[in-house]
Length: 105
Image (cartoon, rainbow, N blue to C red; front, side, top):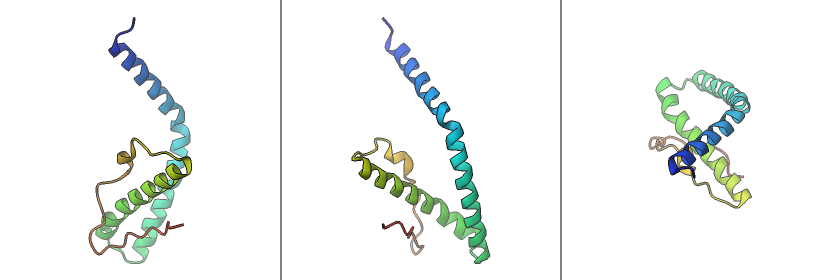
């Protein structure tokens, strides 16, 4: 009979195998997101936003958008994520910065 540690190792290996099977697809999606974010930063700079403003606003706005997408998908599927906390950044935009993502559809 396998020990708890052996079962844990088996399930960990299985989880890693699943992750690795999705990595090429996920990488291609992240390459596209990276390209879009570089375009966004370029346009922000063209509108004279400082590097400090961009660095302060963009990560929090992206995390908020990602969490909003996840919540909406969860509602469609009728379930909540157990790992939702991993998606939400603890960093929030500073007071006075706009956090509108235009996703109120």
